[in-house]
Amino acid sequence: MNIFRRLFKIGEAEANAAIDNMEDPIKLTEQGIRDMKHDLDKSLEALAQVKALAIRAKNDQEEFQNKAEDYQSKAIVILKKAHNKQMDAAEADRLAKEALLKKEESEKQVAQAKTESEKFDNNVAQLQKNIQNIKANISKWENELKTLKARVKVSNATKSLNKQMAELDSTGTVSMLERMKEKVAQEEALAEAYGDIANASKSIDDELDKAADTSTAKAEDELEKLKAQLGLNDSEKQG
Image 1 (cartoon, rainbow, N blue to C red):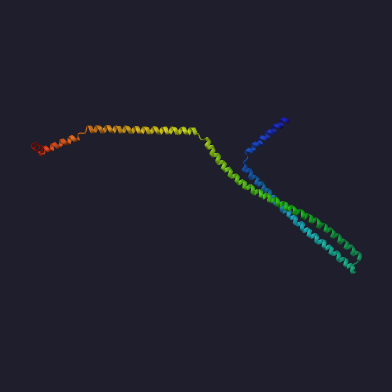
Image 2: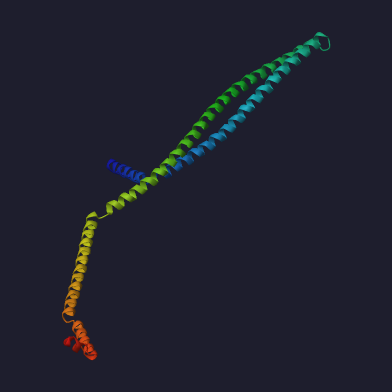
């Protein structure tokens, strides 16, 4: 039984590790901020409720204090009436005593209301402190989230670039460039060879045309014929 329990724990730990690796830190941070904002809303609601209780306790304290003073005043009035023979002394003593008992009861309520008011004031101060802490943490986390998002963008871009660089076949690229250079050199040599052949053929044709050129001899023959027609050859010979 213990073996199966241990195997279950191991499997649970591995599953949790896999989940941790899969979870997006940005989503976790955003969820954390949402949770804190929810806590802030609850704290603000609690603060409003406690403030209401504090205000009520202060109002009760003031009300009971007024009652105590009122009972004190009534007891004084009753005793004065008895002193002035305006009412029976025994009845006046009884009523004055009841008024003083009511006064004492009201003073106890004043003390209780004062204690509650002080307690609620302390609660209000603590809640306000908690609210300020939550607000500060929310602001801090939101700034950290902005930084985290920026870092993720940079890391993704860097990862993509590094992946491209890693997948780049440097050996194949160099080999391809070498083959291209060899091909270009071969094409250049072939072009030069065709040029040499063309120049050689042209030179031979020029030599043949020059060797077989009869234009000068023909021109001299025509000149002699023209001189003969003009009778210039005979005159030169006579001279």
